[in-house]
Amino acid sequence: MSNKIVPTVYRAIIDDVIANVSVDFEEYGMDEDLLPLLQSKWEHKLLATKVADFADRDTEAGASSQPTHQPPAARPPTNGVEVKAEPEDLRIRGGASEDTKPNIALSDVAPQPRPEPNAAGLLPGDEVIDSDLDDSDDELGIDDGIENGEGDIDIVYCVYDKVQRVKNKWKTVFKDGMIHINGKDYLFAKCQGEFEW
Image (tube, rainbow, N blue to C red):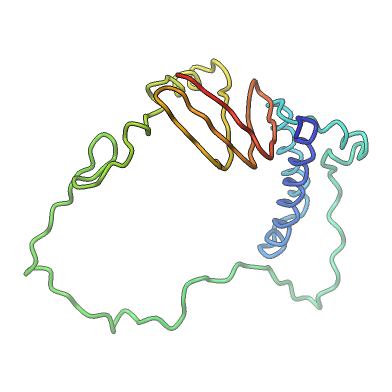
C-alpha cells in the first residue's frame, strides 16, 4: 500500500469513531455540536503532524468541515415537564447492605510486608524471559530525543509472521502493519527485511 491510501484509512477511522460516539453523546445528553468540533480538531492535529492530507475531503465538503455555530433547534413542547438525560448508576443492585457484612478481627493476624519491586519493576522471584533480547529503549536514547524536541522517531506497528536471528543478522517477515518514517505513515500487507547490527 502506498502513502496515498493513508488519508482514506484515517478518514474511515475518524468517521467510524464519530459515528459510534454520537450514540454515547445522545445517551449522556451532550450537545451534538461538539461532534463536528471534535472531528475538526482531530483532523487538524493529523494535518499538523503531516501524516495525512485531507485536502480531498476539504474540496468536496467545502466549508462543512469547519464547525458552524447554529442556534439551538427549537425543542418540541413537553407539557411543562423538562427531563434531563442522566447516565444510569452502573453499580450492581441487590448486593449486601452494610449491616450484613461480616466483622473480621484483624488483631490476630500480623501485617505482611509487601516485597518492593526492583528498578526493572520485577518482584523478587519473578522470572525474566529472553532478557538479552528485551533491551530497554533508554539505552538507545529514544526518550531523550522526544523530550528535547529533536524530532520524530521511526517506528513499525505490525503483526510479525517470522523472525530469524543468526549472530547479528536478523531476517523478518511482517504483515498487516504501518510504518512511520520521516513523519509519514505507510501501510503494508506484507513486508520483508534484513537487518544487521
